[in-house]
Image (cartoon, rainbow, N blue to C red; front, side):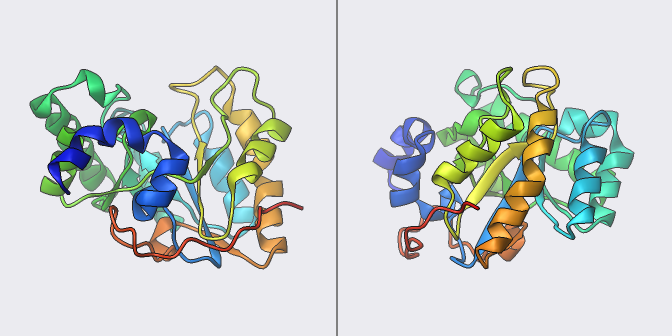
Length: 244
């Protein structure tokens, strides 16, 4: 990546419209006939099992961006995710904004989380999503050293807010969701408003049904046929918001 782009990446990577246009691979733009379903911040024994049950009911697998510290507290749940066929990815060890970390601290955070996932689940991650979507130059370098591909999202549910409801999460996701998009949700409230995961869970079934009603497949990022994280060559999907 050119040096000038590296230095503005932290600011621009947080702006969904910018990254969808200029870095569609980083935004998670993929096959126009597919929607990637992703969850951050788990695994959490208080909430993740409910998501596993809902996904199993609808025969859907997803990508879970795990926090190393959460996995270390519930390694069996991480293995359960793998056994159920879900894709395991890295969200870091902790959940600090990387703007507050230097190069060494950033690498140590990613490497510690990477090792936890590899050790506890037997499935070394290949994808990385930084906390808050803030991708710094140090994080880019650390991800490359670890063989990780950064990927963010094209649609989210604002499901971490105390005011979130199933209806608000669903409406917010649908506002920005197209075929080829990547959805960000949370299967844990460890960094969110207490109990906010229940709104996410309530939105999950109608979200899956709505995507399928539009003739789109839904699943993990490994099935999404993304291009490289910084490529601008992949054509954006045709306009058309997913809704009932």
